[in-house]
Image (cartoon, rainbow, N blue to C red; front, side, top):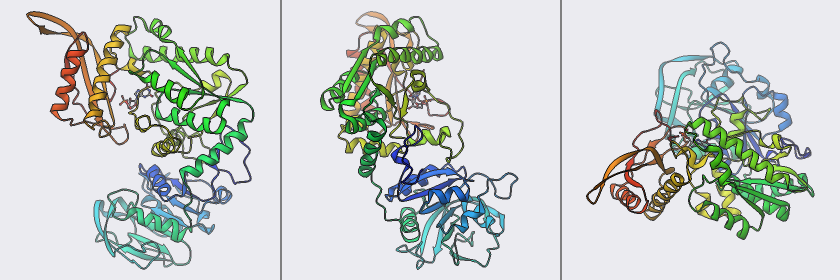
Length: 530
Ligand code: XMP
């Protein structure tokens, strides 16, 4: 994040980084650190995650309106436990420590933190001082969510207690003279009653934020910054048909109009109607300079005879780069390539020097495309969470159907067409998948599940057709309920819906005589079959 005067654009900087009213979350490794940032943004205040040990000097430069210290898995008295720069408490910036963050805060300020007699976990009744600005407008008693083994014991006399539970005498505390608060519970999770109100109180009553950050103003800001950075140059945007690249393209079109070229590669591994939808949205609705590259044969040839899933992925990645390179080589005056990178990717990749360290994460997609092609990168979504991207898509006039589309892997139907990939097998899969998706829409289940698709198995099974035995293909149906795609449960779709899907597929998709429903959860299974 830069101050408003430092607007020199660079690949690391976008207008999203430059916000007047920001709250920083110091990340101590809690699983809910990103959630805290989302909750702050719900209050219309921009929020970023930064490293837990960001120096007070750097924080002063960034001039946030408030700091939130997240929870974390460590114990503050353990060796090498993450600590906070104690100087941050002398900056005059309001601080809210949550769980581990509160303990780190208290420890840095000289209080004692000890293991509790009992680990406190789950819903707990709390009594608070409802007169304090932090609890203003809240009842005296409500339920909070606790998850801690340590707790603050001997509070320094510079702190006062604002709330307690049966097991935790210091459930909420505040410094007597400085705007420094601590909560032993987690206000960011939905299990805590009034959590949103409480965070709102911190942000408005204590940090003094007005709350003017809105997606519409973010769009205006991004548009200005893109124009300034790009000048007269042309920008290429690779469209996949998914939400992230579509919103990126729509935003770039707003900023640059005819200076934008979109490249959509038809690799033959798309779902039914996908190419037509992109052609309509970005060729007719948004009149971008749309290049649809028909590379179906090239991909099919490269994949011929390959059954190993990792090999398939590699071939698809490489072929994509080759095709993209060929197409972009013919586009004059193009110096920039746009990508729909989102904030969680930026956080998890450790790309931001002020941000938390990289977390180990399996990256599905081919990286490094811009560098390989010699372009500068534009990532206008790099400060946004997924639901904010959807909101932006909505503001920019993209259709709801596209905005709420289920995720679709980069290698497309290749990971769902098990065994050899041929034109005919892809057709079978595409048709079966289209039946499933149509039935989900018609029964209003498409939006109730997070991802659903058909898989073509690499085996044939026996069936009867009239008096004759048949050996034909098997289609598996996968549908999952999930919050984050890291874990997932199979969707309890109604039997009559499953029955319609099965009957229609068997009746209308040539060469299929059996449909099965996948009832495995992730873990141990994954969502895709490969
Ligand atoms: P798994 O199968 O690992 O999938 O449980 C988790 C989520 O990731 C998607 N996925 C991919 N996305 N390229 C992508 O862009 C890929 O190669 C890829 N493989 C899996 C999957 O669809 C699910 O949403």
